[in-house]
Image (cartoon, rainbow, N blue to C red):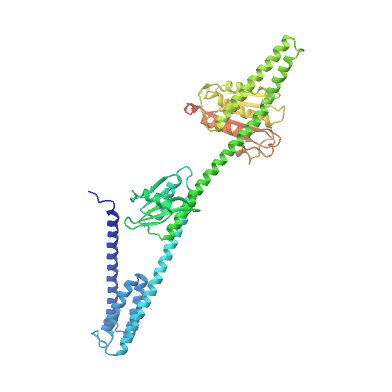
Length: 501
């Protein structure tokens, strides 16, 4: 049958007390052995006089005080006085003192021993305290470094609790996060049943020392507001160190929350920026088909267009431009979903030649003044992919070529096999991309400083194409030299079937 939980800390403290008493008794035995050995050497071996023996005893007591402490030094002083009197002061062999001056010498020796041992022990204690403070500062510094390297994806309070336990070596640590209303435990020690006291310490802001359970509870506050509380089992740290630890935890928790709020604000800002740029781009793209539809409708309503053939031609224009508008709307919806991280693939076998042909048909208006050359290898396997999304990715590359190359310049489209992937590339004769900018062209909202002023765009097209290709398990890249055009390519692996559900 196990002991009651309330008795376990008492049992542990009793064991520690017994261990301390045994260690103190061992050191007192060592003091007796040292004084006895020095007495034997001075009285039986080298036969020194009383003055020399007194100095030797005094040095021994100073060393005992420096090495073991004040209590051991006092015991050594008393023992040394007795030995000094018995072996070196007349009459030798008794504790009597014949010469009254020897009483003065003996009292002076005892006083000097006690004062010197006290000063030495005090210096030793201050040195030990300074070393303890230095170790505490080193551990606080290590904790601050660990907090800076925390994983923002996991719970910060749980990580801090484990870091405190690991760095300081406490048997157990419990950290209460007031805002999240969660308690995180770390370490093998037992801190169960302390949850209510942790919440109370956080609200009241008062530190507590539970002698029965050998536990320290410290409130964590920042700017007078409760952040949480900290419970430490068997804390061998100063009150200043515990308070500094609580302050560091408070700053760390608020820093993480502030960073999370800043990330949410930045995400909201980018989302708003995306909406604005998409609306601007769509408004610009919608103007061309809307203008054509308006002109055709106005001509149909005019009495001057009575010829049936002319009316049919105008109706065909309206029909084509309505289809163009429908494709623009569909593409805008797909782009919004991809930007929100909702890439849903619907796979099927699709020939690369057909994929390129249908995309070029959609781009007919934008590429009508250019010579487009198409080269598709005969040994290409059909792509297992989401055809609509892959056409959207290819559309982005073709649209990019149309925007950034001179009017009337040719555009080349090729599809070939490379290893276990099908590579579709778009070559233009534009101004090219400087090497330092090439790694950034696929970033969201990035646009080259040299073209952003006179070329319409959102900075999202290539980023969306990258997300589509990566969702298929493929890759995307660019090869470009200033003044020699650019070649954008997408590679879809033959194993894309494993990626598309």
